Image (cartoon, rainbow, N blue to C red):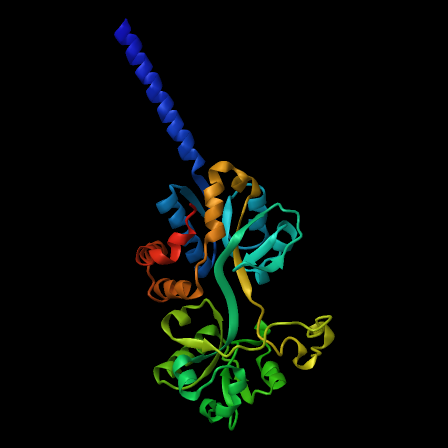
Length: 337
């Protein structure tokens, strides 16, 4: 009888232990929305891998198209978090965030929405467009900014551009880069060429790079091109708009000279991770929230992984885990204490 009671007590203890383990294990589960473009996928796979490898989480992953529907799903608690939203392409952030977006201790944007989605912090990725030249050309010619381009325009000229330098510009007019207008307003004596597709522009730039020729290229970062070729931006004037934002089709593309767009560079996109407020208010997810607040992936690291995934066609999880194994000094500081 005593033996039977002892066995029963042990069984009960075992059941309670298993139940306790199951509860604890359940508390370490999150549901992530995975982006529908390679850069965003890489950023989220980095976050997921660290949460699983280093913090004991089990992350369910669902590929979910970007857009307002994703934000609504997170607000409703159907998903716990998503990665790398670009403010320029988001419409819901102004409505659903109610906090400051902070990068390197500086408030880069203040949101006054309803707080139905939690801004978990920046990813570290900064979306940036600029005009770029190869570093070998910048070093050889002493070009530091766009103001130095005219002195060396002959080096960038082609038969088609005559005495003007050449810009491999935005591939199509529909992107509304307004390259030629920008060049003219800033007094840069270059001709902007639209080649029709991103692939055509990149192919031409790559060929010029392999020949070690100077060239000027419109491109955005992060992009796999920067993971393969050493380029430097010409630091166009900081983005600003005219009062009333006059440079629109509705206003017949009226400019305000050099006081605003398009006589400037592009606005920066401080990309961010975001999640369900109720999920990340729970004590069991406090460390996950602290991790997101510390995360800071760099453009060049993503660009190098983009080369592996988009160009070499390697598996994204394999590439991300390889990066984590080889670069602990870059991400260990993201882990909460």
